[in-house]
Amino acid sequence: MSAIENRIVISGAGLAGSLLAIMLARRGFEVTVYEKRLDMRTHDIPAGRSINLALAARGIRALEHAGVMERVRELLIPMPGRMLHPLGGEQHLQPYGSRPTEVNYSVSRADLNRALMNEAEATGKVRILFEHEVQDIDFATRTLKVRNTSTHDEFEDRGLPVLAADGAASPVRHAMARQLGIRHSEDILDHAYKELRIPPTESNGWRIEKNALHIWPRGGFMVIALPNLDGTFTCTLFLARQGEPSFESLQTPEALREFFNAQFPDLVPLLPDLEHDFFHNPLGILGTVRCEPWHHEDQAVLIGDAAHAVVPFHGQGMNAAFEDCIELDLLIEKHGRDWKTIFAEYSKARKPNGDAIAQMALENYVEMRDSVRDPAFHLRKQVEFELERRFPQRFIPRYSMVMFHPEIPYAEALARGERQQQLLRELTEGKTSLQEVDLSSAEAALARHGL
Ligand SMILES: Cc1cc2nc3c(=O)[nH]c(=O)nc-3n(C[C@H](O)[C@H](O)[C@H](O)COP(=O)(O)OP(=O)(O)OC[C@H]3O[C@@H](n4cnc5c(N)ncnc54)[C@H](O)[C@@H]3O)c2cc1C
Image (tube, rainbow, N blue to C red):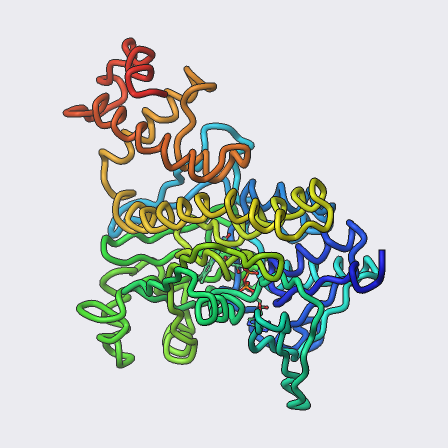
């Protein structure tokens, strides 16, 4: 095979692009990665859309598939559950799953991205060109247009296919929409987010429980906090962009203080830099990207947020992006360099799953900010875990399917989850405790609901 046939181009050295580069290098490709930012390993730049992330089983499976999990493990902080901080109530831990192994992990986006870039380059087959912005792709002439943002030189790369892992604003997706008329939408959520920092203790320890994802649910809005290895927590306030209360209404330090004192009194002492963080940190926009198809012939394919950016409330965007990488890698194993077949099969397999996780992520926002405060929700959770204990082959709660069961595709988790909700409503109607729920007829009820 010629060097040209063996060359492949990735747009974006973020989380998905870097992981995919490792997988392709292991298959013998010479990989060129264009990355528009500076190298975050040598420059102090923000790592991207959030300081840290929750890594779950799907992401871990992909890291294992690429042979880098052992390198990544040292970056992880286990989070076996959500620590709920009700207003005026006692904090309590709600386990994520029914088994001790059902754990999510907090990881720094920058640390993970740096580790993946290092692993990619260590293969000797990956060249990451920083400050190289992919600007456009011309499908008629099969050329990628790239600009070196430090020298301002522009050049063309005829080394298609291009694997576009260039994030939610993907220039490749925009080119597909413009030139090929693919179906394409970007739905911006009417809620946005702002990151705040809880500093470490004097001895560099954690000020609140380290091994948990903390949530201050308040109905229409919430704060969450994920631990970092340096003893800090990154808090994220999710709030409406307009209305009352909203980012628009919190314009002055006084308004901010009043809001936090009223809504998050136990959090205020943990946030000594609240005002500085709030008024200096950027406001993050959230949205859902949908498009179809995710590829064009043998020329380009979309991966990760470029194809399916989702709101972050299921903690699955990166996990889903990593799953895309496995799918592509396995199709390359199956079909060699037949890009047309590989891309078509990838798009067909992944698109329904992208749609399903987008929907579940939107639904989970309501669960996190609101339902977790409702006793009926807790009863349904208890019944879910009890059904899973009694019928482990037939009943796995939807949350667990998404987070801990990578063998179950998102689309199947969504479909089974809908049937589960009907069953749970039936079993818990008018009940306030697990003892009142009639589980003797549960097996028949499972069958009735096709579970
Ligand atoms: C607040 C928040 C919290 C989140 N929390 C979680 C979580 O807990 N768990 C989880 O799984 N997911 C989470 N996500 C989602 C996650 O951030 C994304 O799904 C993930 O980053 C997708 O990876 P990606 O590589 O596809 O895109 P990105 O990480 O966005 O990487 C894209 C890369 O492409 C580069 N690029 C962009 N344009 C160009 C161009 N024109 N030319 C060259 N390079 C370009 C960018 O610089 C970047 O390096 C969260 C997102 C947000 C906003």
